[in-house]
Length: 370
Image (tube, rainbow, N blue to C red; front, side):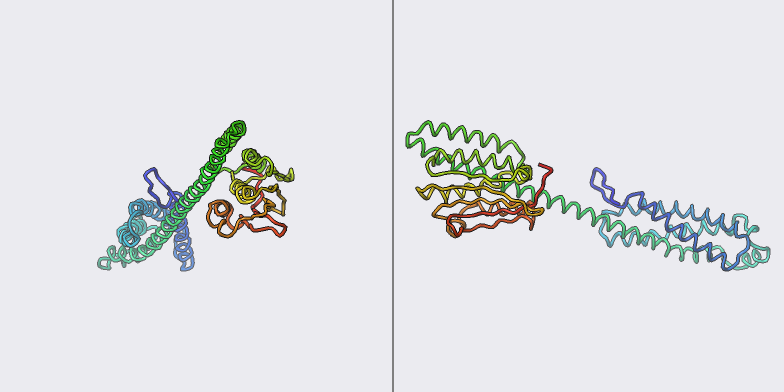
C-alpha cells in the first residue's frame, strides 16, 4: 500500500489507487444499468455502450484527481480534506459535461424520440440545468472516492509510522544489547588485571605468564563475534573454561570445576558471554573469600522448549544482599535476557540450602541462527 521514494515521500500506491477507481466505476455502472433496465428505457444496448464510454472517461478523470491529490499527501489532514472535497467540484462538472455530451449532444436521435427532443429544446437553459444537476450527484460520487483515498492514505502513513517506530525500537534494543555486552569485557578485564598484578607482586612469573596466555586466548575467542549474535552453548562453555583456567592460576589449590551439559543442548543458542558475569560472581564470592576448596558446577537441562542453565558453587560465604546490589553482574544478565527474549528469559538466584550460591538461567531453546 505504501510507496516510498528516495526522498521519503509516502502515499497510496498507483496500483491500489487504480483498483479503487476501477471498483468505484464498475459499481456505479452496474447500478445505473440496473436502474435503466428497471425503468424500461428504450435502446438499452446503445445506452450501455455510451455508459461504458462515460465510465472510461470517469476513470481517466478520477485518475487525474488522484494524481492531484497525491501532491497533498505530506500536508496536514485538514488541508488534505479541504483539498479533496474542493477538487471534487471541477472534476464533477467535467464528468457531468462529458455525460451530457454523450447522451444529449452526440446522436441524440438514436436514444430519444422527436417529441422528447422537442420538449427538451423548449426548456430554457436545459443544458446548463442538466449539467449542474448531474454535477451535484457526481460530486458526491467523487467525494466518496476522495474519502476512500484519504482513508487509504492515512492508513498507509500510519503503517509507515509503525514500521519506522519498529525500526527505531529494534535499533534501541540492539544498542541496549551492545551496551550490556560491552559492560562485561571491561569488568572482567579489570578483575583479571588485578589478579595478574597480585601474581607479579608475589614473584610468581610462570603463573603470571600462564594467565596472560589464557587471557589472550579468552579475548581472541570472545571478541571475534558480533555482540548481537548468539553463540552455541558449547562455545559459551568453552569461553568459561578459558576464564576458569585464568582463575585456576590464582587459586590452584581450592578451585575445581564440573561441567555437566547434555550433548543435545550443546548446539542450542545463547547470548554471547551470558554466563561470564555468573561464573565471575562465583569466583569473586564463592572462591576468593575462603581458603577451603570450592567446586563451581555448570549444568544444563532441557524442559520442553526451554533450557535451564544452572551455575552453582559450594563456597561457605555466599554473597549478601548488599553484595548483589553493588555490582553489574547479575543485573546485566537479567537485562540481557529480558532484552533478548522478553518474558521467556529469566534469572533466579540465591543461597543454597546445602551452602553456597545458585544462579538459574531460563531461556528458549533456539537451535538455528547462531
